[in-house]
Amino acid sequence: MSTVSTRRKITTKTIRARKGKTKITSLTAYDYPIAKLVDESGVDVILVGDSLGMVVLGYPDTTHVTVDDMVHHTKAVSRAKPNALLVADLPFLSFGVTRRDTIYNAGRLIREGGAEAVKLEGGERVLGDIRALVECQIPVMGHVGLTPQSVHAFGGFRVQGKKEAEADQVLRDAVAVQEGGAFSVVLEGIPACLGARITQEIDIPTIGIGAGPDCDGQVLVTHDMLNLFQDFTPKFVKVYTDLGNASLEAMERYCQEVRDGIFPSGENSF
Image 1 (cartoon, rainbow, N blue to C red):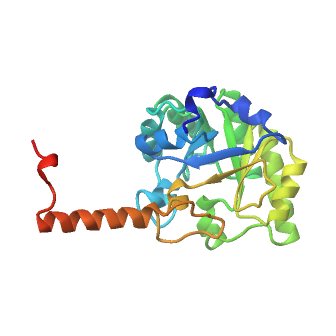
Image 2 (tube, rainbow, N blue to C red):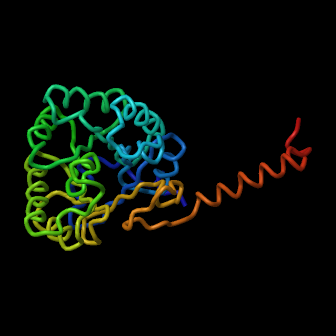
Image 3 (cartoon, rainbow, N blue to C red):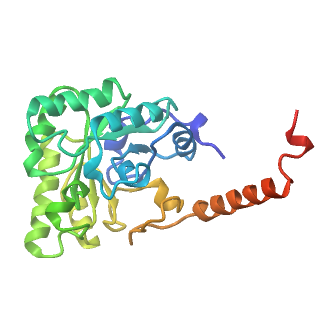
């Protein structure tokens, strides 16, 4: 049953107020029809993630995604007019280089794409960028731990914060995101105990993805949880329904019916 008609618009203030109270739910969307479905589910945050580079565009990682890509897909999602908060990723090298470019690129996602907030990866090293965006009235969601745009620096998609020094750095990064004025922070690919520790020690909501059950909320890539992207499935993903194989079976049946002359039938013809 749809929950959209009975709920109010979710804002950054709504998400901020959920800290320690009601768990926050988030899923990705990259186009209009999926955005409609995701919003109808009653999710709190729709993320137009740069994960689209892998699950939609077929790139090996997210570093190939451009600002133009993000604007294009964010526009499509925003046309669904979701009640969920719409957040868009700042892609690789669109921030953290010059402050002016950071503000300009984030502004494009808001003004052209229709996003209501932006997400950027990093902690202490991007503190100034977060502050600059917040000063420009652009709400920011942080992202620390396993930051996919750093895949080459990390030497692959590896869990972060296993060692004490690494864990302390992830915590400092989360604190920096908070100090910069972000309204929430994604914790990705870290031990569950560290996810719990950070959630307890900072005042803004934490949204986990592979960060354990004690975060203030969770986010998943929709294509992963529906098994629409089958190149690989991260350990932290739970497949809720297998639309990938169901879709394949439907397409195979269509092909066979066309070859056998079953489709189109009289009821499918004018």
